[in-house]
Image 1 (cartoon, rainbow, N blue to C red):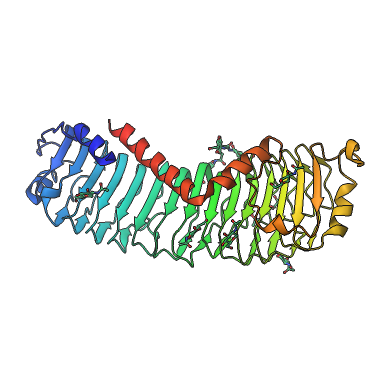
Image 2: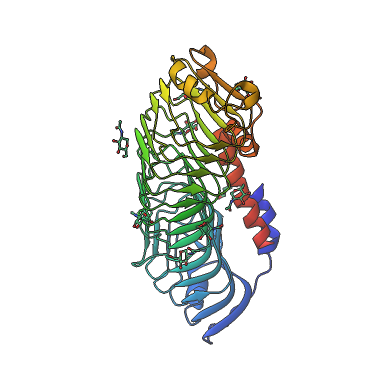
Length: 404
Ligand SMILES: *[C@@H]1O[C@H](CO)[C@@H](O)[C@H](O)[C@H]1NC(C)=O
Ligand SMILES: *[C@@H]1O[C@H](CO)[C@@H](O)[C@H](O)[C@H]1NC(C)=O
Ligand SMILES: *[C@@H]1O[C@H](CO)[C@@H](O)[C@H](O)[C@H]1NC(C)=O
Ligand SMILES: *[C@@H]1O[C@H](CO)[C@@H](O)[C@H](O)[C@H]1NC(C)=O
Ligand SMILES: *[C@@H]1O[C@H](CO)[C@@H](O)[C@H](O)[C@H]1NC(C)=O
Ligand SMILES: *[C@@H]1O[C@H](CO)[C@@H](O)[C@H](O)[C@H]1NC(C)=O
Ligand SMILES: *[C@@H]1O[C@H](CO)[C@@H](O)[C@H](O)[C@H]1NC(C)=O
Ligand SMILES: *[C@@H]1O[C@H](CO)[C@@H](O)[C@H](O)[C@H]1NC(C)=O
Ligand SMILES: *[C@@H]1O[C@H](CO)[C@@H](O)[C@H](O)[C@H]1NC(C)=O
């Protein structure tokens, strides 16, 4: 349906004069290898290039080093091999949507695109890009491929990155230093290991279904950080000092036993920890002083502590199936004065030991929270399936708009 929306935009077909070094087209459609070879004399293609299904199983567009517009391959179940020895820059979007037979992608020179949108390319197990590979892009979406590695994609900074439903992907290692809007990694291979050794700051991150994640340098999360349904046993962000505006949440990480955020002093939004059934102690927040939203913790944990906690703007709502009376007694001293405490917690205070309902909660209750807590509630409640759908749709709609 979305693909149909795109078609009118592609109807404008330019023609190429292959004699000059710069060839200007609006959109040129490659309908055969001969058309592709016809571009070889153009060093720069000023405009967009569409590879049509008619073009056949194998297309080589070696010659041009730059396409100033988009490079598109859409709804194509014929193309098996796509290659360009020379293509270095795609000024617009490099889009491959629903290209179901593509199994060989060879782009040794590609280093820069404005955005990369690859979705439903389910025969592609290897992309040969570089070295050095793709190092500059503002946005990257890679969804529903057969890729086991993203080695040719190694950006230093990016605005949005969405890596989802790549069922064979078991490793994602990136030199990424900062990410200015949203990172989503979700529903890839069961054993996906994510390594981001240089990541210093990130706006929003959602990490789900990974078996390990390493962020040794991460210092600031400007938005929210969510960790849902992962299979890691421990999570540590040794250098994280604060989230500027968003929440931190850990929901449904079945094997998680240890969360360690030793330098975290401030959460701009809320803190949600729920349904992590192996988590017995919540004691990895030794420096946490300020929480701008609500605190919600539900589960089977036996102990929880925030020794430095000094200011919670929202509600504080904690309950466990286990006997957390000792922890509750300590927290109670921070409750609002109306509830007998010193008022460091500003919102409603509730802490319930031996609460059988504590394992049914994932943070979507109707308990009133602070602003951050509020968004935590919604995000966590929406669930990941819905969230993926929205993110994926966002990508497609964005793409459609870009093309129209
Ligand atoms: C994918 O492309 C094929 C043609 O190759 C088309 O028949 C099919 O409807 C497309 N699927 C979607 C979801 O657009
Ligand atoms: C983001 O990372 C890029 C590449 O490492 C760097 O050039 C840029 O200065 C960084 N931006 C900020 C705001 O840290
Ligand atoms: C995120 O925070 C870092 C460190 O405070 C800052 O350098 C960066 O500009 C912020 N980025 C955004 C998108 O707000
Ligand atoms: C990923 O997590 C979601 C819930 O957050 C779950 O429904 C889904 O089955 C998981 N996918 C995989 C491949 O483990
Ligand atoms: C952690 O933060 C400290 C202080 O800002 C810095 O010196 C150190 O290099 C950081 N560690 C890593 C692994 O980035
Ligand atoms: C994080 O995402 C939220 C919701 O999409 C958005 O409003 C916010 O601006 C993002 N934060 C940053 C720092 O980009
Ligand atoms: C808690 O997480 C488990 C997986 O660890 C999941 O099967 C269960 O549905 C979750 N419970 C709730 C109430 O979401
Ligand atoms: C939890 O993880 C931190 C950081 O990796 C580590 O220092 C600590 O010893 C771990 N705690 C337990 C009980 O395993
Ligand atoms: C705490 O959360 C539970 C479950 O969401 C809810 O029923 C209760 O009303 C909340 N309590 C407060 C004080 O917000």
